[in-house]
Image (cartoon, helix red, strand yellow):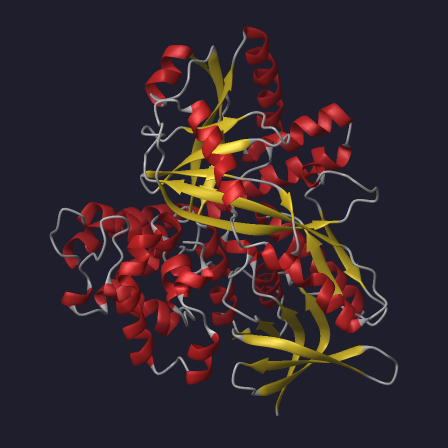
Length: 529
């Protein structure tokens, strides 16, 4: 068994774990980031793709006079602004319409969304506005008749790639990153304090990670690791499954999304532009963590019924992909509380043995979650951490302004590098939207025949498949086609068509061992077809 010695072991490379590793290396800590599966392979790649404060949390805050809900909205709105500025190639502004049936309803939402805008402060991204019924008809031509709407702005982003780039940036700054590496044991010293984690790969190879502090950032698996550290630790987590479907029909042709303000279970529902199609979600079903990633037939029917209700012109919506993700919620103090009303706040817990667990929260607030976690790490170390050093996210420039300027200049370079096809403009947008300023080096290093787009849905090329395997830790077709590129999340059948080519690249890479290949299910079993 090989031994490693680091300041900090972070278990789990989802949004929270990758953020903890990123922020820790900025402060000079030596870090090991251990992930049992793929980077962002769980909940963190299965969100609704929104960077938002949460309109429904704001409404709950006022209805229930709940300051925790209001604080969550405020924090998330500030973080929305942060990511839109720091990763403009991965995140963009998105306007959504909240339709109304009456003038009173329009006034109600207008006031509420005015508060939503105000809470963002200097990180605001634009004011809400009224839409007449005529404007709404133009933007959403198949929508049922409404009095009008209030339109407001939030952010839409590529969750899987932001997660990936946080982890890879931390790795470039010195963190040791391991995937397909499950923590199977924790070691204590004579005083009962955690001093090491034992990891194991698919072929049975074990490594010992001696650390000053161990952080549990496993999301849905938080309780299992807490109870590995302390069998007496009470369960804290509640899992709620959120299912999504993607429709071939583009119900948002002008890029305006729709927020359905009320559903049978008290949630709001989103219908959003998504790669020229429509993303519909999300449900809220309490479930066992083992069932969190499977979209059920009942949930799909539930979503389709709302599509037909709100878009009566779309009588036969065609589903091209579906997925589900489990929300790791903190258990409420009372019994019988609907999970849709659980506050999406986070908590950082330190067990007597020293295990630091970051639990709950939401994608948009992964950075505050990481900073709160490092505050707990400081207490365990018994000394303050140094001030953070600048660490540019992979794909970004030195400043937000530089990123935008360099992306604009890079377009001409990509035009000269890419084949002159009808998809060249879309391919440039896709490459920059995935890789930012790393798009040119990626394409320039590839043979010309590897640069041609492979699909009309998302213009992925062979150079990207190879890059995902060689430089982005992809070890299965699902890693490549669902997370490094979102093709499987948009059109599952199209991703299946490219699966044999992807498997060929995986086999040729020399990076996928026989044990990994055996333990990795085919793509058709990892995503609901």
